[in-house]
Picture 1: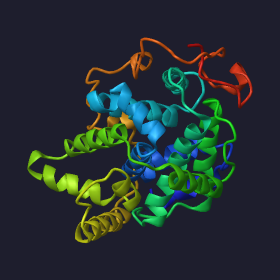
Picture 2: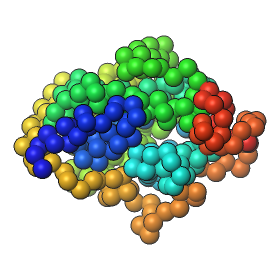
Picture 3: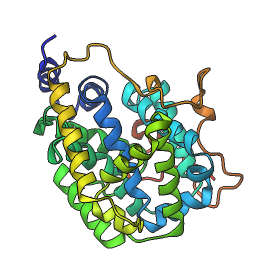
Length: 312
């Protein structure tokens, strides 16, 4: 294969009808490491929204069981990317995710915001920050947008933005209005950063934490009240390192064999394999009343916009 063959393949596909296949190529062939980092930062940003950060703090899943929560999130989202939303592991993962979400009172606005982070942050990481070995094309950005619009529909989210630009405006506006310090959000942030450090050899753990902090933007550092904030030198060093990595990757051969989430050595909770139906959280009680089957699949479970979270 030549270096840009996968890009050419995405352009032979339809940005809407083939959005699952395009995101599979982007995630497992073109940018597996970058997409993982971008989606990790996307989820991390949500902790700075009080209604989300406090909820995650109360459940103790992100603070007391950080590794497992990291693994479950990566595998569930990865399964949907790898297998799509048709019967099988992809739909099973969608069902499990909706079953977890239905147990908590989560507003449609928060759902829309979280969805926007998944759409926007990969584009910012690869294009705006310049950390990708190449830029995403407008065609690929449209496919990413369509993929998450489809996921949002199957989650029962209402009033989903139609374009990337609308998702970007939603994200920026929501963060400007809602970012605020909470004890729960800070605790989840600390636990997540502590976990990230364990992905590196112990002798460089201190440097790894500083590097992780340096790639967080000022709004996150300010919201979580990290003091001292990353120095200008550390921010500059992290930026240079990531852009240098991009130049090296650009000269590498294209990845012919896909790299999926369950191949990531940082996922450690299931050395002997996993059962999707047993992953995630299982609250003892469900405080929210619902009356629809817990899979937001339009053809089988009702039109988009209905409550797809299932009975409590």
